[in-house]
Length: 506
Ligand code: BG6
Image 1 (cartoon, helix red, strand yellow):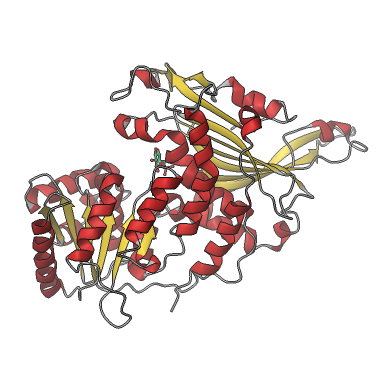
Image 2: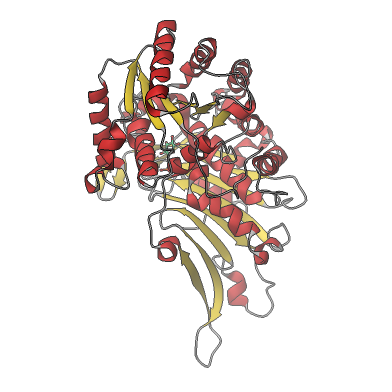
């Protein structure tokens, strides 16, 4: 039976999770803390084990020690605070092998069946692919040929594969990867992860829109002037120079995280909370986005790259000076774009997207700008661009703020915008779980609602691959420089100014 987001609380089935690429950053920073916290909160099955699979030689003990260091640095609850670490660590194992060698998979199979006997994990498997994307095809192929991925069988043990982003490098490679994996996996065994969907505030978009009657009647082109989505980071590319040189911000953030935010903001109400119903509506939105007009490209898409500047009082290097980055690199660290959704609800409402590294502030926010009031009664209010704005803060300072006009007390009639501000931390008083906690929990539970379906990937690459291609084609559109710590290149501000509007200040 298809699982639904509503079917809570979740009871997880016994299983073993195998993490491919377990010596990488993601495991120590995100995956292990997520597993640890799930375990602390009794959200992992009692019968559970985890195997790290990677190419480097190391013992179980060394692997456990490295994971402990990762938890100390990155976990929301620190392992010193309790004694659950020692019990949990006894369920962690390491397996060394190249990703393409049959013997390594045979040895893994034997190891997993021994762990089944020891921990009662009943043959159920989650394989988490967190290696470089070029290894995804061979891993899936080997898992299948060694019968570690099972044919679908509703009564026997199950196997699921979580695939980290990016799924493909462009439209062609994504189609190639999809063709390859479907030889070995059915769509419901594939969990394409985008960790934004695991964020509490992103899930709250569905609740906010569809559990309140007041917004729905306003949520359309009659009342909304434009919608802005910002994903800005103060961080540069850190130690990920090699990765970023191949990716750029369009592939790293826009193709996945931003397209997901956009589809949740713009989708029609789904008929139920079942995965199929929600994903059907999301993909409809993505398919309704008007293709980028290549004749008007520079009015619709701006790209930039950070130069040296200052962040929080510290001088930081420009992108081209970062480790593993070519001194003449043309990779974009900033993108702004204007999109239109050609359906009845959104026709004529521009969606402005911007994403960048080394910007002034870390902030992910969706801003809904409502149409101005007629310029009849309160001229002052009708000219103020910054009122009648709904800001949904995904992170940090998670919450929702509405700016409305108010009369300043007194005998005259001056008007001033005021902010009604809902803050998550004041509401719950507890630290929300990390995105990966929710998503791993869902994968163990077998609910793929918050994972990306193939047709969503296809739609988003179909939209964005022409942008990537255009950037390669002469004469190349400008790559505008911006100072680290600023709000991006001037051309992005001009793009909106030409439309008579502006990015909302954050
Ligand atoms: C990742 C990107 O998917 O998301 C990173 O690869 C980015 O470049 C990160 O920094 C941002 O995630 P979050 O959860 O900190 O917004």
